[in-house]
Amino acid sequence: MTPGAHKIRATRGERPPAPASLLVLHAAELLTLRGKPGPRVREDANDLGVIEDGAVYAEGDRIRDVGKTSEVLARHPRADVRIDATGKVVMPGFVDPHTHPVFAGSRAHEVEWKAQGLSYSEIAARGGGILHTVRATREATEEDLARQGATRLRSMMAFGTTTLEAKSGYGLRTEDELKILRAIAKAGRMAELDVVPTFLGAHAVPPEFEGRSEEYVRLVQGEMLASVVSNRLATFCDVFVDQGYFSVDQGRRILTKARDSGLGPKVHADELAETGGGALAAEVRAASADHLIHTSSEGVEAIARAGVVAVLLPTASLASHLPFADGRRLVAAGVPVALGTDFNPNCWCDSMQLAIALACHHNGLTPAEAIVATTINAAHAIGRNREVGTLEPDKLADLLVLDVPTWHHLGYRLGGNAVETVIKRGHVATGLGPTK
Figure 1 (cartoon, rainbow, N blue to C red):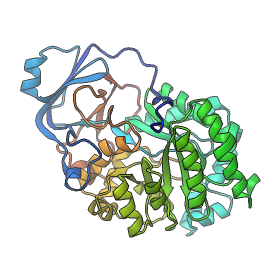
Figure 2 (spheres, rainbow, N blue to C red; figure 1 turned 135 degrees about the horizontal axis):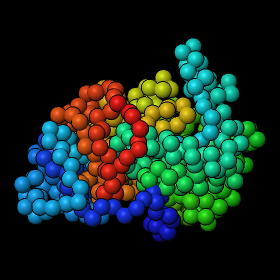
Figure 3 (cartoon, rainbow, N blue to C red; figure 1 turned 60 degrees about the vertical axis):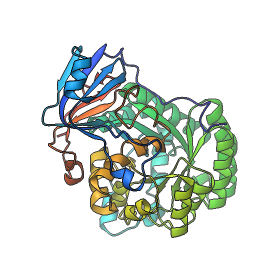
């Protein structure tokens, strides 16, 4: 069975029908991202499929034509909505392949601990970190979680994200993990974003199972997973395989059971230490291996051979005072690279533009590689490559108009918001709030 095949599709907003037709024309640079099938690797990861004076024509929620403005206008001279993109960049909407946007509470107080030099693990030992958020999230109602999650998703959309993956993992009890996954679906509908849900019951060992991690693993791969599958609440299953969290063997058991149940595997891998998470992702043919800060050369080679997408999370490195993953090493090895924000209470980042800039300055990616990493490669990381990630006929009409003279500014600008217009499924998004 194909992982996730019988599971739910990405949650999408309950929006009215899209305009009959939409035309974006005269883009100084239209980034189509069209290219070879499959995730982009090596030199192909620098090909943005740029069309100067480009145009996109859409009917309903689908793209119908892409090309030079003169050619597209000749074929489609009229449209219900026209957007003049003269002097601007038009590109696919960002796809964020790694987020944790549904939770309660705040970890703002931990910034002072970071300033005092406490590490990620030391903050967790002091009562902060994941388990701090778990306590607050368990007490929250599903409605409050959905409402807060939708607010965060709208903020992400204002910065250009039109599709994202969202993980559970702050419940760590069956009823609370299900509550979070239901809230993720509701938040996506409220924010009118396409959301791909991931079950992350193995995010940490909860306090009631302290010293009994094997018992907790049995709960995750048993009752929890069965409930998630029977309620059709997730497309993927993720495990935090790292020092102080879950072992390779524990991750293997959970992910194998998840894969056999129809969920696609994902791995939080080697963020804090080299613990074999990257190699495990290759072994189970995961859709993605995420973080990869400390992955060994052997692990990188295994990921490349298996075609696993590497999701780099530079904003998490920034927020947690961790090293930045070596993106150049991954590109040279032929690994397809994607980028995400890792939006979570420890890394409150709603901007894929910041992830691009950090990746160019600290992960060793070129601006073109970073754009590929936030569009088509990110779409592959969450199984949505047939629908989003490029601008070509029959894909969803998810695109951005950027108020910048050239796409190079995406790797150049460290702050602000270059997005002037967000188009989601053929609709011009409104009510996103000021972001500039």
